[in-house]
Length: 205
Ligand code: GTP
Ligand code: MG
Image (cartoon, rainbow, N blue to C red; front, side):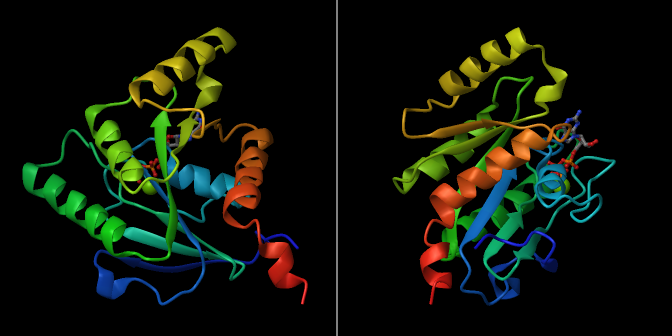
């Protein structure tokens, strides 16, 4: 039994724990710099055009958005950080929203870090990676916008991401592009292998 991606619902937008939906589904959250491609990726893996709102202007998504996928999996679009034009106060507000989610949300089984495959991960990315690794879990990193790279650049840049974020053998680095179906398939393979691996047993009753 697989997740029916056509049975996807936007649940709500929230900024603090009192807003989070009541749920028992395993939750996968996407973090990353503003404009890295979080919302675009959610659209791509659900095969939708404008399900998660893609911002024309970066730094506009300042809320946590919860998506219920077939009542089996919760996908969470976190606010993007590192938006250069944001004020100090705005940046603090965003990091408080993200930190509260990371520390309070018991249903969170994997925080996925998105980085732009063209660029070296930033200090903010490294801090986010520390948060992911601090509870001993594995790192899952998505390198976005790979359609903008040549094959050779891709190899070099993926190596640079591995080095900068200090990824090790047990971690996962998935190249991703909204322009190919393959990256979405690879993402779902990851979900079935690591997040929903017991779905068959549960459904087999
Ligand atoms: P915030 O909501 O501000 O945090 O940004 P975000 O991480 O959700 O990024 P978003 O999905 O809004 O994408 C930002 C821009 O990058 C948009 O113009 C997208 O069309 C573009 N984009 C995202 N993914 C890809 C990709 O794989 N390839 C290409 N070429 N463009 C992409
Ligand atoms: Mg977004």
